Length: 282
Image 1 (cartoon, rainbow, N blue to C red):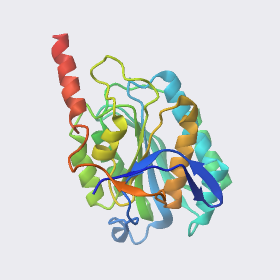
Image 2 (tube, rainbow, N blue to C red):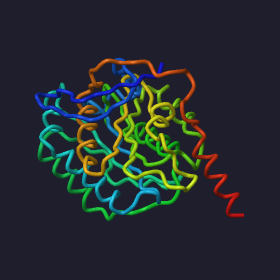
Image 3 (cartoon, one colour):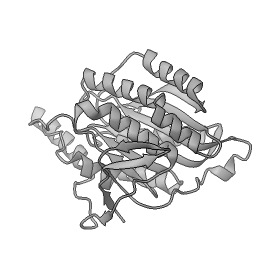
Image 4 (tube, rainbow, N blue to C red):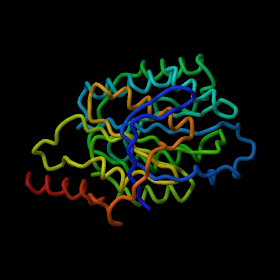
């Protein structure tokens, strides 16, 4: 069942974090990969950070996004959430994506277990030049993330994909198939829809990107999304989302079922808009 959650602030490890969050409320699952790698190093959570660098993202957004993740990883809130967990270790990998097949790993699997390792990961993120891709394949990003989990040398009680984006899937396979396949393997997908720009007259834009992400992208028990609508709060939203994921928390506020069972925004809207754009160019 789909859910919509509105959160003003969440208490994590003694720190208050805020934001607008939507999601699915349920306990976090035990990863179905866990038993297949009995000799893997144990961590609290395996976290794949999948970052949109498609052409619709402007250079300023790309820079803020990169800085936001780097600063979040070394933040007091993140380190408090890390230390509060059993074992105080998380495994993180960070990659950038655009069209299907255009996925670039920036940070291979790394363990963060305190300030020193957090600093090293943040520095590695920041030293890589910012790049831009072309079209948007959320399905390709999810499928790539699943492969990273399969190759992971770690075993976490939770496996989470943190995926950002400023538009719908318009390249590669339909997003719902990739989402459902990942969820079936015990993976949770959380979303960070970026809505800092007003939709332009361009037909590839989607006005209700947050609803699209909620109904078509995120999935798994406890899945949630955090919407960025204010450029000034970009970094704050990234930090809040990472803290919640590392702490293994779903936002605690009144939960209201979303209206209807069908997606409120077509899960194929990106593909349809892209095809229409191509026809208009002919």
